[in-house]
Image (cartoon, rainbow, N blue to C red; front, side, top):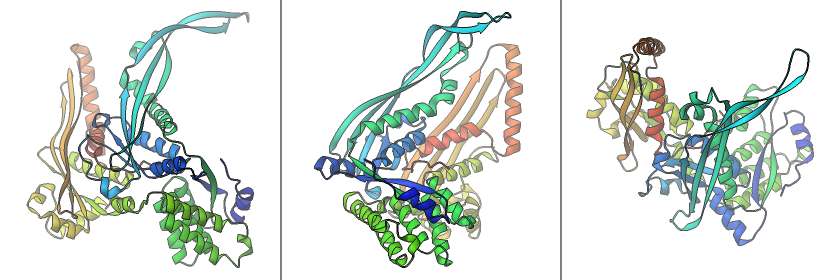
Length: 489
């Protein structure tokens, strides 16, 4: 069900602003089935099996989140974990848990002949049949929806597949990894789309919420762009700054209400919509803005849906990634692993401090290397850095074996998370990322050695040795932690 948007997106947002808008959805019906489904999907915690960790889980989570938002739902966070008790469940307080088990089938090959039409030099059309191979891969997803208390709410299995056609001569050169590099993201998105469609589907009413943009103000335009990319916290900070500077007025208050609504902070959204309406009461330009309808929608959301404040508080807690200790000969490797870890956590919604700022604070107390941190009390490190959570990294292997006939690139290390709440370590995992290739052909080995040396020299020059393996190690090390679905940024 689609509610009529107000005229021409409020005349292009009252002419001073561009026609930016976002869509929200609320349950259309009051039946017990509709309301139960809406509540369950409102703040969904997506949990993959540990074996799925090397798959592109962020792409799946983002696509599932997009599908659910069209019906008023959302993915609160995602992680990969086993059947043991979830240490983050209580703090996140989701509306329901969706367990997803991904099964990626083999790359299947089927030969066929394809008609190819062409014209000879005299313009006569000819038809020939060329040999082709169709390469197909299938992704099956087993879904199980449960309440936070573990009570079963239903299960389904969905599947998606992607194919490409290659000439019979080119097809043998295509391996599973190269095929996934070209089609893996699309396959994940299609599987997530089908997963969203397989979940309970409450009837929904959708509305368009205009975002007011001051075309003459770069900060206003930047805030709108960030909002449309899903960076609602960043957009809210810019709108709040404009308000503090006396700019924007009720339009900025409305924008903050839209941001709160998008974050599922419905009570706050209702308050902001009412405040915007009160401030705009004497402005004839605001006559067609649906303040009361928006406030009523948000109030209904606050009454029906799970609260998001608990999860917001989880991700907002100040976090520091401390210098990594290592027993390797690499100068840049552990430092790059640390930077990649901090960047990945930020993309996952964690409030991670800048690593250089953390280093400056630690140096005031005589700590400059990861190995020194073993003799420090984590509570002191937290106090000095202003962080409530600390990540420690220990790198045990960081090496690049280049022998021509054998190439082996290896990263091994442990990642630990200390939390000031319990005053203890709450997460620890040892992971490895290894790539290897080899040949018995002498001429080929010589060429491979040149390639191995060239790649190593470039990585050393850029300060990012073992780049692909380092990135994979970070993905594997963080897969057991709750992460927000990635935005378009």
